[in-house]
Length: 266
Image (cartoon, rainbow, N blue to C red; front, top):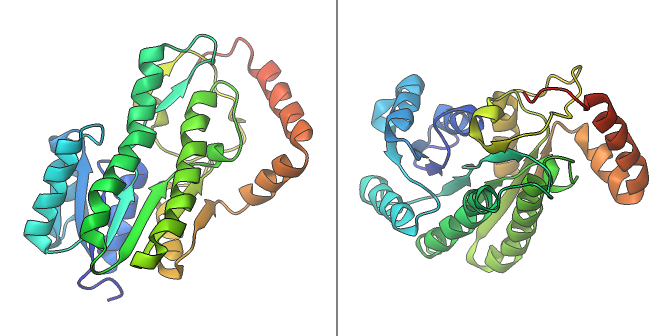
């Protein structure tokens, strides 16, 4: 199979996009390590995926360097190498910039951005010998600043910059860094927010893509050695439109804000 002998580590792998990515690589023959803050949830995802002889599950809080080092050491002890590391662990926030709790803001950046950077710093020395791929799961919100999610967007803008800059730095070590930017995804986003005090601007008619679709796009991007994947592809024109005519996109967002005024958070 395509991934026979390869070892893949996925953070935030207990559900949603992380679990779907783990499954996509596992089905191609890879050995997969599932990490999340909760060891029981990691193990539950492992049980759902099956292939117990090719999987490991353990707890890892990406805000803690010692836990990242432990997860990496156990992976190397069990499987001998790491070929792909997926930085998927993340939290969200729905709040205004003016009213956001500084503690919640810091928690979000510690997970979404600094956690990914810390994983990369821990991993790169182990990956330099044989090369490999680091995959950062970002967001279309890393290209488009979204009202009531501007803090979340900021963390993803930074992740996009970190990933693309690191890709140039690490190319000489045969390490590729792929940035994946999903749009609306049908996951339990509301269960992983550090604050949820504002309405959702997502149009009701937009159902979003599945986690499985994001996982397949991620896998194809990995195989092609790409720098970035946007899924669904229909978000690419929106990103380009914002780059060329930001006022037009901002007008549409303002209309959405008016329509959502007084709507309960979801």
